[in-house]
Length: 476
View 1 (tube, helix red, strand yellow):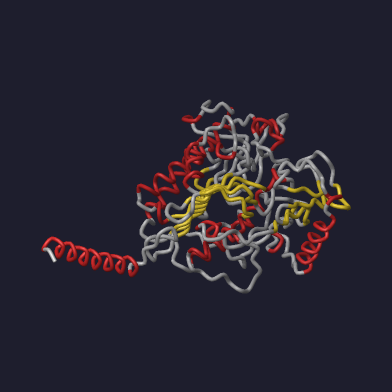
View 2: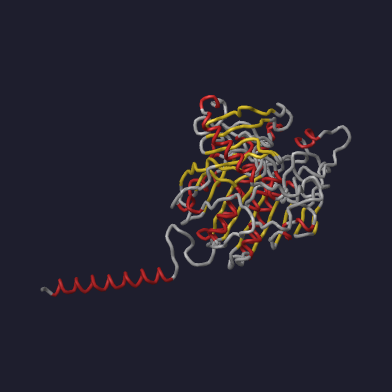
């Protein structure tokens, strides 16, 4: 054997030993590829929640004139979900569903008489409810709620009473605490807001620090607050719920975004929200937390169509905020987690109620067994190792179920105009649409699929038979 051949064998042997050692070190250190963070520390979570953003208001979802480069890139690098829903088509019950992983009927946070909480409401999210924040706190997370809360403005209902270490924001919708002069109606006042028209408080924890809140800078200040929290808590796991007040009317944007969009003031507002998303993602990269943080972008319900060009668009979907057609409850949803979330378009069913069990799965937190959860763990779909387990979506309006989706099919048992418009109509037989073929809900196919309606009725009956509505909080 030649000396050259002997040296090659020695080099090969040394390389194999080196490779085995490196592999063992990586394995022992807990490093993973495509399946989670590169150490054993649980991941961070950031929810960026818009208010009244429509399915068609983001470039990645088809808007032709609103520029959203940061959201578009977030969708390209992460997952864009096309069948993602909220728990209700108005603010309070939708947010209750997200925060608890439960249908609002189970915690009293919905009403057919008074659909959301108001500044004179005495109710709020019950202290008996577990929230995403309170569950993550059990695993050592730092938690912050920044922005619109709308789950109770009294001290016992504020974010600081529901697992959040820190709160900075407006406790309800930005159109509340109205002070219109004589002769100015609500619709006019919201579309052309003047100083003094609205008097909402800006709070830090449980104290009012500014009233009225200066809303032209609110998107920017929410963003800065979130980044400061990330910087302060970078050495421990954190959860940030960044719930923007926009694009709920009245619309406000900073001077930097005035007259910037071809879509007018509504487009200006959305483009500033997109700027905010870009700032959040850039800060995570700068802090070297991007591969350790799951960021979710979505909205609480569909566009407020009664406000014309000051409201958004549901794209090809029918209806909007306040109703149970698709435009009211199907929302843009983007998941971003470099190295963990598999980049792709996902057409499986998902809802905001799924975020609580999904976060708990990533953080290795067992859900309490003393209550029913309506959410599903989406982590297999996010990682690309499986799909969503969800096959059913309930469309509640107040305390009633108006529609039900099972797989491709959606049945409407009751229809009603969002705000005014067509009156409440009970359908027997129900209307039936195939949402894969007809996402705009134009062609009723009930007469062709009696077997589908029978199966859906069984699902509905079973759901109702085991349902125990909680004490109503919105009517207090």
